[in-house]
Image (tube, rainbow, N blue to C red; front, side, top):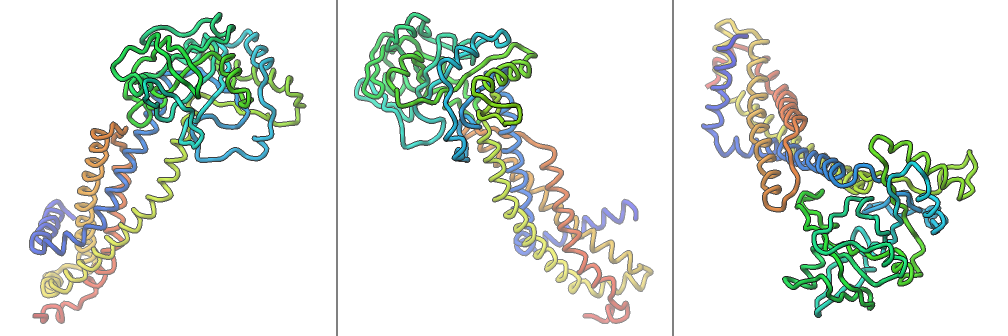
Length: 420
């Protein structure tokens, strides 16, 4: 095989496409759709994974959440019966963890609301306006140092305000925009589940570089003193313990806190933990669940599209063999072997699907970046998706072109030349 052979093959493929534009377009649709799906999903999922890592590193890389249940944050999985029956962390547990030497900072966290969609939404309003899906967190005054909470206006509450169970609140910028709009929020009154709170601080506006294009969670948070949350929500007994570890000492802190909590909960050495240990990146495990779910749904779609495309390519190759029977006979009469004919038609099939694959990859990546521009959805160009799309199209061309190529190679030269 030489360069002229491949040049001639490319020319034959392009001439065939130009001569039968509609037929070729319909034939390649399946290949284009299949490879476009691979490229689109690959770009989006890779972007999501990288964004989770970036957000975690930027916001709270050394933060560990000790919880009653195995997971914290939004999740597609429901707590098990065993998790629901576990003992809650007590205030004494929280104080004991705070007295350890290894953690840099420690704060409890009492949650009213949900990280994800829920029917039990706190009611937050002011000026006859209501906040959308707010999340109330009762924490200590050192929480900004624990989890990198940036206050833009006003201040965070003090230890004295927490000890006195004062009704003060630090609100997310999204809450401010929803209930105060362009008005000044500092010093104003906010009603949380029917109780009046004084707004003393507003968090910095989200950067727009959250996991899916925005920091929507940060926008809707309201921080109140932990003791105030205890007083207002006695029915919420579950507490999380949020611990910040010094740089390079995360494993040491996890071990120290785990040993202390196991001791306080009366666990023997042969018993597993009856509490959850979550690193900051595990808060975003919902993204991993979404990635896995998308893979289950999208991969069969892509495979089905490639199969349909392969059937179409096989059809057009069979038609091509029939149309070029006389040409095949002349080539055989001039010395071309069965192998030469086989390789030629296989090459044509592969080149045809490669064209569809290249178009599909381009379409998929363009769609991914269109999503990124329109809704700030993270998307990057993963090399593996491009390579996978190309190899998939080559495989389809090889599989779909094999039978027509064999049919062409088996033609009798004399009979072929007699074909009108």
